[in-house]
Image (tube, rainbow, N blue to C red; front, side, top):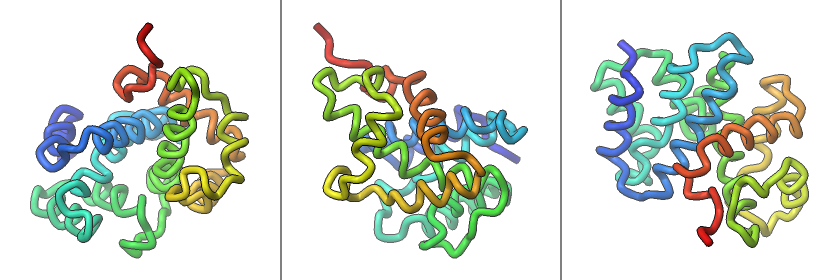
Length: 189
C-alpha cells in the first residue's frame, strides 16, 4: 500500500537531518507533482516518489540508493514506488526509466539542484528572480554547479518528449510555488 504524504515525510525526516537534503526532496516532490497531470499520473503518488527518492542518502551516502531500496522493501512499499525511486539513478541501480513517472524523476532530480544554484547567485537569492533564460545562461558553464549532471537532465527531458526550455520552465514554476519551503523567497528587508 502506498504511504500517505505525511507517512512519506516522516520516513524522510527519520533518515535525513540535513536541511538542504530535505529542501531538495521538497523541490523534487513539487516538480513531480507538476509533471503528473501532464502524463495522467496520480499527483500524490508522483509527489511521494519525489519526496522520498533520496530519503536514506544522508545516513547511507555510500550505499545510496541500494540501502533505500532495501528499506523500502522491508517496509513492504509498492513495487511501483520502489522502481520510481530506483529510476532516479539508473547508473547506480540498473533500473532504466520506462514509465512516465520513472522518466520524470530522472529528468527533474538534477535540474532542481541547478535551479537552486542559479537562485543562490542572484543578488536577492530569490527563485522568483530566476527565469528559464537564467538557467540556460548557466547551462554551458561546466564550472557552475559542476556536480549537476546536465546530460541526465537532457536525456530525461528527451525521454519525456519535452523540449529542454519547456522542461526547465515546468520545474522552475513548481519550485517557485514552494519558494518559502525551499528558503528561496528572497532576502528579508
